[in-house]
Length: 331
Ligand SMILES: [Mn+2]
Image (tube, rainbow, N blue to C red; front, top):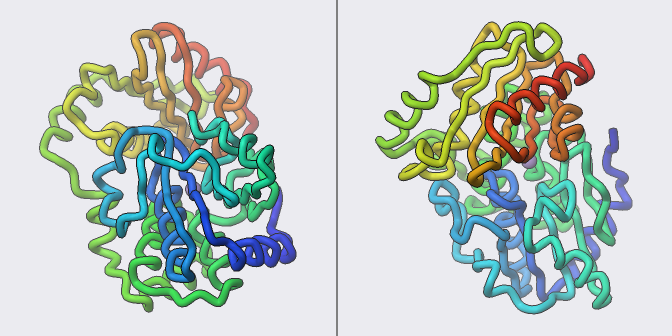
């Protein structure tokens, strides 16, 4: 476990105070914490006069549910400049999480630039030149707020809304929250955030096509009570056919339904990402470390929320997940 040293925060703030040209990157398939954190920090740096841009390697556009967070700072990965003096990577434990843009970490360092990593994953590899990394933080958004405080920045509503979106989603709607989480949320609401609107836009409202997709996928879900060291595994498969016509957001929502099964400690969703490739989401309730299982399969994540990508048939992928979960440490 790593907590944040105060001089790391001060060093990062000094770097940001001097910054005039900054590229901020979220991980591939960005969620509200990755993109919200990047957009919040980018807005503050822009207010301070810096040239800023926010990007990610894939998909090619901003997920629809997150568009309301962007005041116009996102640029497609193909339109990034060749290099920048300061690269900031948010919510990304390793350069691999930046996808094709991961190469910019080394190229920026080689060109004498700085790479600031802001993240709350325990698996962070400290790949930057400067780090604000704290795996006790409930969201990267919380670390960005600490940086903004260190900078003495004002918290206006558009910035607070981006941070609130990251906080509410990464804590599963404040289920994983401490008194301090609510103090942070209170500050964001005091800045003018409408909590109902943010949750509706970012996490709740879905196109009608979600319902038939969910019906198909859930009708084939299975419960395996002997898996995950006897704690139970509920799993579902989203094929490319199931995914046709719905947004990434709807596909990512399936795990939240599967994880509500009482008889299973672990939920897994196998999402087809190629003819013989599966992106696997794993969630645990509280008793088993799924990040260890994901790491054994070449992925990573948090103890209770992790993922990996596996090749082969879905039956082979399921067997690999079962084997890894049988060896995952209990919490
Ligand atoms: Mn996060």
